[in-house]
Amino acid sequence: MAYLPELLFPAIEFPPTMLFVLCSISTIPLSHYIGMSLASFSAQTTFGWGAFINATFGSIIEIILYFSAIRNGGLNGLVQASVTGTLLSLMLLIPGLSMIFGGIKFKEMRFNPASAGVSSVMLLISVVGAFMPTVFNSVYGHHSLVCEQCVAPPGGNLTCGACLWQPVSFSSDSVYNEFVVPLMFVCAILLPIAYVVGLLFTLKTHAHIVNNPEFIDPIAVAEHGPEGAEWSKLQCFLVLVGSIGLFAFIGEEMINTIEPTIEFLHISQTFAGLTILSLIPAAAEIINSIQFALSDSTIDQ
Amino acid sequence: MHYTDFALTIELCSSAAVQVALIEMPVLVVLSWLFSPANTDAFTLVFPALDLVSVVFAVIILNYISIEGVANYFTGTALVILYLLFVAAFFFVPSSELVPPVIEQVIAMTPR
Image (cartoon, rainbow over all chains, first blue to last red; front, top):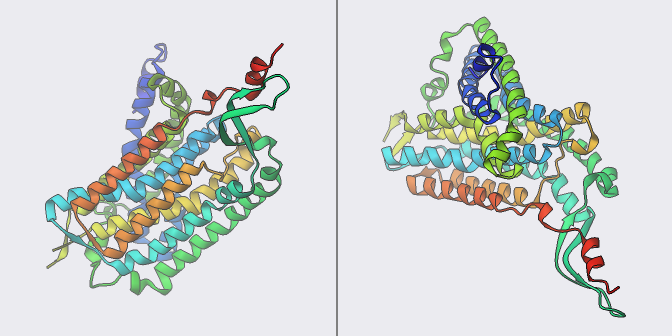
């Protein structure tokens, strides 16, 4: 994989951009294997364990990647933009792409509005909750007025033009340090509780709403991990641990090489996070979603 | 009219997005608080305003599609175009270094 060239030819200096591209490509099969082992593992256990495993490892790739970026330091903007990019691609790009492919094949596709309704309220709640510190800071946080053209005629008043409101840097903002950071930790504690309650709702107490047999048939859900069911629990565990370990290595290398790559491409950190770093972990998801949209459900009308 | 596994796509996407907002972001906050080298580099939940606006719009749009329960290639194209528009908006975000510091300007204009 990506480490192969480095291991085979340790003497040769590979350009960082090339290393980054190689690393990115090698993450796609890894995230595919992680998804497959998760699917088959949760298919073989009780719903509680399956949900717990999905919650723990579902976004482990992104967490590993972004955490090594945070530890690297100075890449905060990149990580924030990647989180936003992940949300945008999950809500606009992936549904959009699978609608295009499915729509070309089937003209029109129907799905269960009741089932989607449960998670769409959940989605709105979670986004409002997660962006609460942003709203709070934009209301109460300190801002500075940065002006481009200031003229001070002798004896006259200082006149400024072309001004821009800018949030002051967080380290020097007393509002941020005293109020926003505690609010952030309150959010960090309360939001996972909402997730656990949501899991209980959709999987245990109200499972009949979500799995309405009129719309979603069990065969389609079982196809979620077609090859995965062939794996035993031990195999799943080994594949999961191996893939995550490999991914941690590759993610570290990606973060090390991303700064030269950004300079090479002449793009901002924000843009690189929004596009490159958010789409790499989602690549396997995009392929899966398009496959789901193309596959015919057994209920045909 | 076809019933495809498209429901599964919507379900997977929205549950993954919920997971990002409810699990991934809090975990990143706690991890960066525990391990970040300097406090200024820590991951913060205070996002730029453009991020907030674009994500909220995306949620509203996805909810409308979920309520309708019908999907075709026209809606899909519109969604992808909207995504590309947001990406373009992020591409044109002016970097803060372009704005010159105030003090220098004032000094340059003051009569000697």
